[in-house]
Image 1 (cartoon, rainbow, N blue to C red):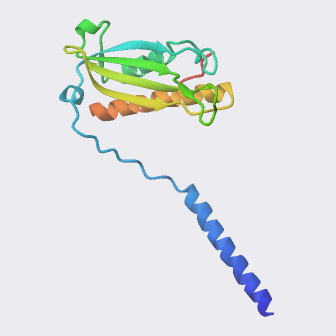
Image 2 (image 1 turned 45 degrees about the vertical axis):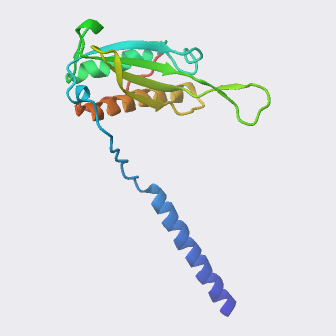
Image 3 (image 1 turned 90 degrees about the vertical axis):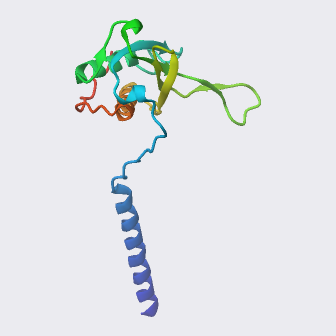
Length: 186
């Protein structure tokens, strides 16, 4: 009798601990608050913006990502343009800020191998330059998470573009309307 009671108490405690752990895993994570250092005043209220296509490193298009090397540039430009919050210009000479968006696939040495083997860790990089001085003011990078299937790769690429735009909005203090998820490229 005593061992049965001990077993039931242990089982009940285990179920309570397990259900509590599962419930904690389902709670939304609090947002990460970023406390930036001094922000260059040119970023506080961006005037005219020129977005340049920094291209893409080899090995990213058409696989694992659909489209071509201008995909990130096209999506970012469209999001800036449709927001109505930014004044986009057609050339850098008319701009206050020059933004360069690049899809990157750096080659890294695989850890623990004596021979050289390379892997791809793709990310998007947005660098903001002051047009008058050609000085970089700020750089953001956003990793493109790993996926197994083409549609998942494309969705994660779109999410990375959207996160870059959110970072740009946060640093400039400009809020735009929520953006619909882009349709997959073919």
